[in-house]
Image 1 (spheres, rainbow, N blue to C red):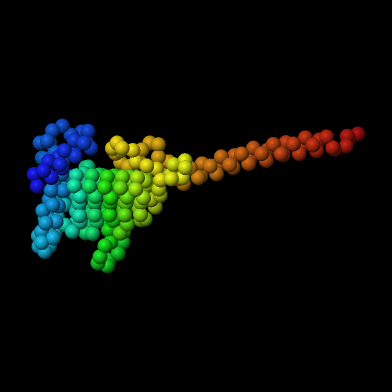
Image 2: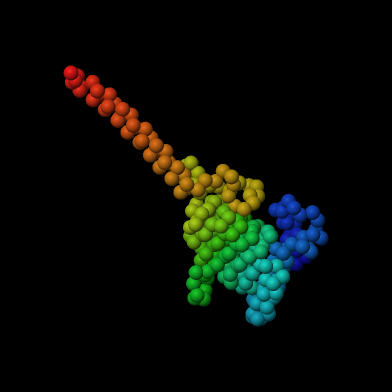
Length: 232
């Protein structure tokens, strides 16, 4: 248990350049507090002390602003940065080394029991305000952009942006791969929205057509001037 607590402290130094010392993490980081309290709540939940598990999760929600259902499964070194407004549902599963920013929702689409929340593979980054909805899988190393709404499975290493979420593709029409470094808030400055690119291409094509029509109009007018008989 002490090793896992040390891991949780160390990941803050890896992923938050604002941190200054360990005491700051232990005393002031709500994401750190929420994960530790979830470990306790989840232990009670698994040992059929469900009311106690829910009680601890609600205490954690009041203290940190982060709501993690005690039935949710968190991997090792999960980092919740800032964290206010994060909601993680009962059947959600989060893999090792994932990063979640404020306002993230891992929600469900059904009122029926059973698996109804998403599963995040290892090393997934979910940007601020993003919503991942339903029993879908987000592949290893994927990035979900800020405020995206994801309702379909995301392939490993892809970047998803927009509403509804769309996979950003590179010039070879393959999912854009994550780099090896840490990228805050999901997409990088180089990521392009595929719908925006499509609209830009249509606008360029329309401009080219307008220029062609203008050239043809000038040519026809010049030809008409040559063929018209002189007036006396």
